[in-house]
Image (cartoon, rainbow, N blue to C red; front, top):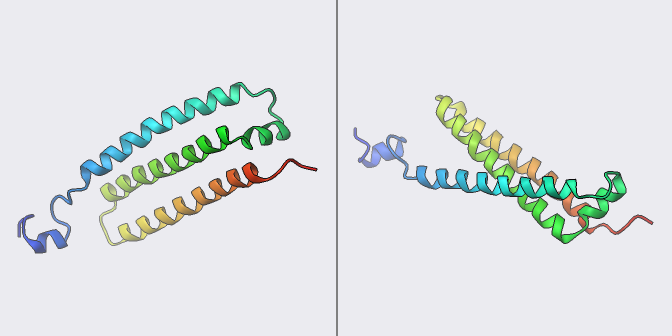
Length: 128
């Protein structure tokens, strides 16, 4: 049974024609992570203070909240892509599907929590 037969493709033998797409996404998210982390380090270094009120006021700016959201999305997507490769390369039995589901759920839930926290601070008014 060669990789060119329909049965071979169904069984997962041979190329799935998705390697280049996955590779590009990893490289693009890596570049985005570098740029956004550089922005974050410079932005945090330029803050006048590091107490709760100063950080909250800083995060309420749209010029800060939007790049923070982009950073969270990029980091978690890059995380998922990287661990997907590890699972696909080293998990060879039926638990591979289970681990992929766990990875996707974990990534989705933790990214959702991070995005919720950013949005809550960004849209909450100043304390009374």
